[in-house]
Image (cartoon, rainbow, N blue to C red; front, side, top):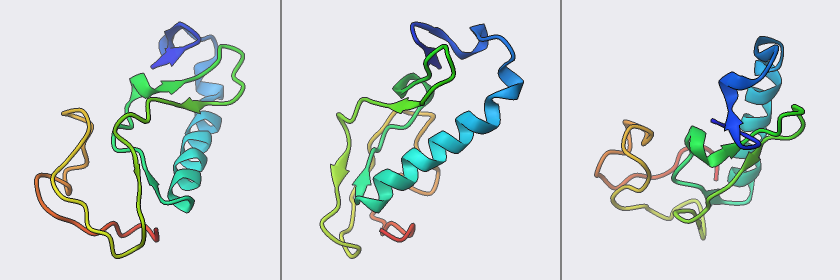
Amino acid sequence: MLVAGNHLTSLNALDTHLCSLATQLFEAIKFMHDHNIAHMDLKPSNLLIPSEYSRLTVFNFGLSFQLRNEAQLLEGHAGTKGYIAPEVGHTTFRPTCGW
């Protein structure tokens, strides 16, 4: 995971900041979902954590899209192998996260 040009493991006192970083990631995902945005490629290399432990940034929205409504169906899959949710696979599915 990138940290202002370095990797997450290069930070000092990482254990004391993991809860905050996880919370920020969940807040970012909730924000996207509240605005009907499906990122479709969340993975460590699409997250940036400044070395000062300020705000986590989600980027690379190249595969993302905005759902028109809750009933919209998605077909196929998008994302990076190894990071795609197993329930998605190659099927049509309806998002169930309250979008």
